Image 1: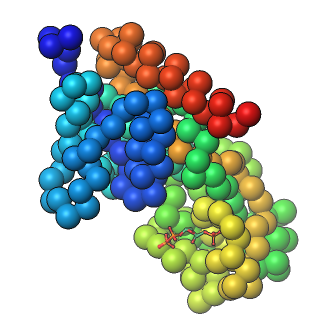
Image 2: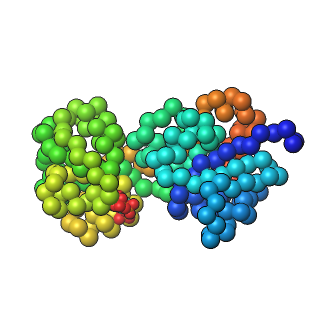
Image 3: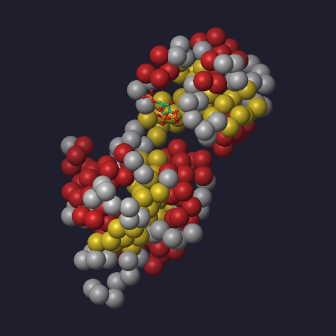
Length: 219
Ligand code: PRP
């Protein structure tokens, strides 16, 4: 047991990390250190199980995992798609469910039908580009924003936006609607390809336990 190396997890900060740790607790993986909210520590260790955890900004999680700084990561599918890193996506954790959509005022619907050159604002320029260029074959101008993307059509920066829709209330409160759905999203577990080979048994066992727990929850 003692010669095991640490298995390192990078968790997307915020609700995703809390939900992940809740799920891990249910399969007996705990990290007491992480529960101390006043702590400024960045890396938390479970000595007994030889596990290490750290929290990172969502878009950085696939980076840590690709470079092997973390063996395993938990992050939203939106981030995985946008960052397009060399990692294996191994498990849908089922929480953080939402949708990636093209949204705008009702009047913009028509602009999506006729391959018009429109302006698309998004925090996810790669997802927007992939969708419009490769799927719809529509040439568009993509404008990268960093948040409150719904402002785009309201202040006439863009015709439409590509953004996450969860409850739909941000859209409703701003007179916007879903015009097209790009894909469903949820939290995913990703693994470094080399770690997958070197630590196959430990990772497979973890995945097996998580799958069983998730299936129980669904039942
Ligand atoms: C996200 C997303 C939408 C909103 C959707 O933004 O970009 O704006 O949540 O949620 P809803 O459908 O439940 O209203 P977030 O709150 O992460 O902040 P941001 O706008 O700064 O990105």
